[in-house]
Length: 168
Length: 38
Image (tube, rainbow over all chains, first blue to last red; front, side, top):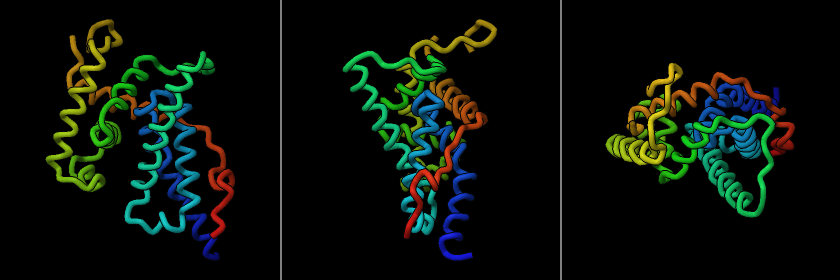
């Protein structure tokens, strides 16, 4: 097996183990599964184009995650411009309205607060792991989580109604 | 009733789990990228 094959194999393994968590992260931030998959795919394409370097990093996933975050923000910005310039095509399978609101409330937060919430509340990483990933003290992560949740929750307004028709 | 912090965290977790459990449709990522020619 030559160096190119090794690189391909290591990327394939990375792709298989990372794609679903990254799609899920993108979904939390966009509210649209198709968009989340497209943006994650783009993030992986960029990762592959630099894989020789990225594969040597301690945590390649953190690099792809940052690319994905930037793609989500750019995509949201393009959407706002498109909406201002005319009607937006209706997707084949429209995303869930309540989740679109959740995603919009998240994206309205400062970057660090949003990332902390997505990693901790979404991906289930511990405060310690998020602190390592974001290179800040644990207390800072706790503060971002608390402030971010409170601000985003206030934007969401009334609590959602449960399946039995009562507020959860 | 206003959504509180814990409810918001639960909503985020629920959205994440829903997406993680949904299989995606993927193009062949490396061939689509044009390959790492290095």
